[in-house]
Length: 449
Image (tube, rainbow, N blue to C red; front, side):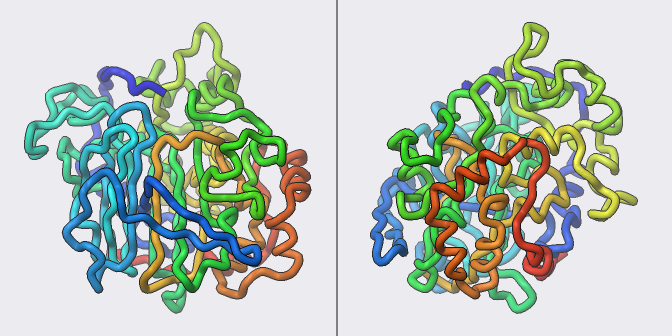
């Protein structure tokens, strides 16, 4: 996916909207105000012993380490990596705990940056594209943003600043983290979110501490790839799949990864509703369902009348309508329901948040660790979107609860046949998570506002 040249939009995007998106209460899970974060490494060494995996986190990256280097207050490694063909400018927002000491920086193709955060950190990481900053990053860029005003980046912009102090402007694919949550503060929650739209493929990789090496990587390492050029052919999770699938997302032949099996490089150019493409090709009125569904191109393969895929805005970013934003009278999972954008996003990225109350099929949980663990946020991974929560929902529940897997669970996470059976039955419409106790697991996080 080549980052496109800028073009103008007439929609206004105010500081007030930044703040409302940041502080929106979206979930009975009770997470911190809005969302979370992640890391990357250049090289990793995986050791396999008796069916378990131990990942050694490297310290040699291509960018400088932040000032809080491995202090007692910041024992958790956070790595951000760029596998894109062009430079990106990651944005980082800390919502709780000690952050990495920076809110943004440039990351050239193939580069990564090692940082450290506290074990109670909560925040979010996203990538900005097509940016232009002053030499010290302190002033607005010189190019026009989506609303015609002076902003620094086409997507994910932080009010024109290199060092982000607010949530990035839509559209942006976001990694969200709450490292210490749950009713007894003994769980870590994380996810990939498309609630603010989509601009870049993303993966989150968990590097366990010595206490959590028993957790299989095919229950923790998720990816969302909804851009042509980064999508590998399907089937990707089978013994005859391409060789790179054997190590993609730090998985291995012992623990095969379940992937979304249907999308192609043609279909991922057409998943974004036409009215939400960047730049938008036709106007949108309030109410995503009424306006966008009427467009005959929605959900269809690329046609001569449809522009090639660009970053995709969320309905909320375009209409500001409470029904699209799950705000006001719609601030409840009983009232706010997925629309066309959410359903389309879920088809291409089954493990990603597609709207504000998409908790059951989008939230990953691991036991909380005070030190030794690490996280990677990787932009533009090449492979396929994962389908972990639909396939192994019960097993992810058990990991998050700290109870370990049952014998049947261990058998399932090691079974190619089980994954292929689940993939064969996938219709692309709606997600079903096995295990009725999931709500009890994700309903324990406490929101800090």
